[in-house]
Picture 1 (cartoon, rainbow, N blue to C red):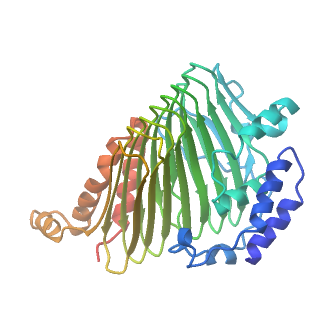
Picture 2 (cartoon, rainbow, N blue to C red):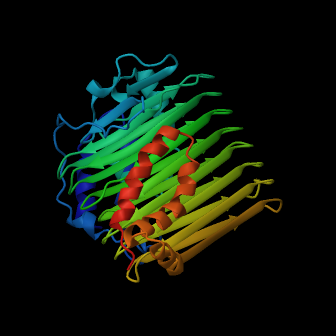
Picture 3 (cartoon, helix red, strand yellow):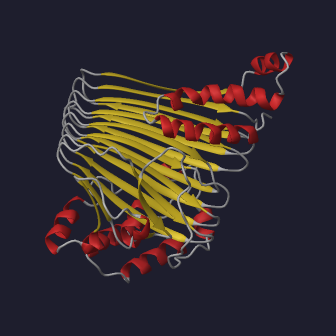
Length: 419
C-alpha cells in the first residue's frame, strides 16, 4: 500500500458524522485494496506516481473563486470551493420541484433515506471512488419531483486554488417523469488534486441531459466519476469534453436497471505536451429492450498519452438489446500514444451489438492540399482536426454550450502541432 493511501485512510478514520456507516465500509475495502501498479489491468497505462508525489493538501474555503462564465447560459450554480459547498453562490430561491440540500442539514429520517441510496450506483471497484467515500466532508443531494421539468441547468463546479486537495460528492435523483440538465466541470489553478464523483438515479420515464467538462491541464491531478442508474423507459444523453493534465482519469458507469432504457454517451478529448487522460466507460445491460449508443473520439499530439477502455456487458436476461460502441482516434505525433480497448461481453442470444476502434494519423495529402490553396499550415491543421470533433459537438442538445466550447476547442487545436 502506498504512503498516500495510508494517509487517506488515516484521515478518513478521524471523521465521524452522518456518513459514518458508508465511510466505515469504504475504509474497510480500502484497507484490503492493493495500490495499483502497471500489472493492474484497470491502471496498466495510467501510473499513479504523480498522486504518490503530490503535495496537495486540504485548505480552508477561499473567496474569489468563481466558475468560468459561459455567455448566454442561465444556470443554477452549485459551486464547491476547495471541496466545500459555497452557499453564497447558490440561489436563494430554486424552481418549484427542485431541492438542493447538504446531507448534514437533513433530518435524521432524511439522512437515513439518503444513506440507502448514497454510493449504491457507483461500483465498489473504483479505488478513488472509495477514497472519495472516505474523505468527502458532506454530500449535496439534488432532487427533482415527479413530472417536473427544470428549465435551467444545474451547474456543478469544483473550484480549486493552488495546491489544494478536494473531494466532492453529489447525489442527483430524478423522480418519475422528471427532466433535468446537469453540467459538471472542474477548474483548478495548479498542483491540485481532486476527486469529484456524481451519482444519478433516473426514475421511470425521467430524462437527464448531462455534460462533464474536464478541462483542467498542467500539473493538476483529477480522478472522478459519473455513475448513472436508468429505470424503465428512462433516458439520458451525456457529453464529455476533456483535456489532459499530469494525470486525469474519469470513470463512467451506465446501469440499465429497467426495461426500454435509452443511453447516449459522446466523449471527445484532446491532449498535448506530456498530458494524460484516461476514460474508462462501462455499460451494464441488466434488463431487456435497452439501447446504448457510445461514440468516443480522441486527438493526441506531442508526447501525450490517451487511454480508453469501453466495456458493454449484456446480461443473460437483457434480450432485445441494441448497443453500439465506436472509438476513433487521431495521432498528430509519432511520439504520442493511444491505448484503446473496446470490449463487448454478451450472454443473451437475441441482441444487436457492435463495437470497434480505429487509430489513424492526420491526412497529409489533405493538409498539403489546403496549403496549396493558400491556407497556412497551422490553420489547415485546425480545420482538419475540428472537422474530426465537430460532428460530436453538433450532437450536443444545448446549443449555448456547443457555441461556448467550439472556440475553446479551436484554440486548443491551434496549440497542437502536427509532427
